[in-house]
Image 1 (tube, rainbow, N blue to C red):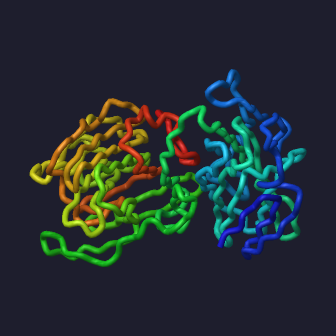
Image 2: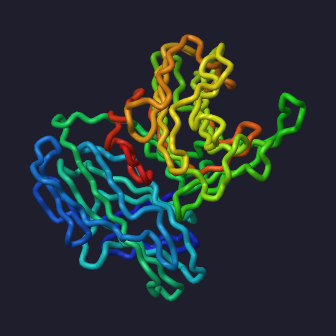
Length: 436
């Protein structure tokens, strides 16, 4: 159950919500006529009524707290950024919390002192869950840039303040018909909760569902050994990283699989998938310890044939750092990419266009560069899908251990884009998006 917040609110840990009045994510702060007004909940905020196509000035919104953590709690971010068309509602962004003080009894959401409330920044609180979805309702806003902030304050059982963190939001409202915008319809995951969590993915429909399922049970490998599936994932809301570590049982499997992202058999089809993956400090990566693997299954449900792409990431001296496992059905060997410095995190992007069930092309990029790290593969014999469905499968599905941190994932079926086409267009709240 969710509660929509358009005013100051106190959230008690029993899940009871009690309005405290006077602001928070609500109250009216923007003039529907488009005239400049103080739409911020902090006195230093600003509003520009110019559109992005004719603006002669840049609005610098005040930042949130410099640190997302106090001695009592931490948030996944202190800065939100939205771009939304005039008269529309933006996609949601997830803000999660981690609590470290056992005396904490309630959370208060309100404007910072001296601020006023805004109706256009909306918070959906999940009862009894340490997260909230935030989005912009621009149906009453004219084109321009709007700034606001919300103070997240924790209280003890006597309603005494323990500490607080300010979360700032910048909203760019684009005028209809003046600046063409692409609706990428992103699905996005920011690493703050488990992939199987009900609120793990922000969907373009602005509704949440459990998008990934943990695969369980046992199977037999080619040597007749019994292989079990287990949960090797662990999310850290404080760092915003999802760690996969299967080193304790390298022969076993730990994978999660998403729900489908298309249902019709109409071609051409496109998918652009991105993820940011980081090595884990202190881990010795070798031929038996990889960094991560993701499988993009691209079949239509109920079809008789379909393709899949398996992207492997490793950090050892015996193989290229990034590879495609068997790009074509008739090609048995993996296809190696351009070596990268695997001691640092990277953003990997796979752009796919299908012209038929197993016909089409794909390209792999890294870190926002249009120069591929795996050149474009075009084939009528793409590797056959294991299951005739479409999904994203992430994790360890081999007989080597995987140890790696997943910072975020995002994907769209609106096109097979080059990185340069996505500059400034990734969904907000992911984390580090250097290069984009």
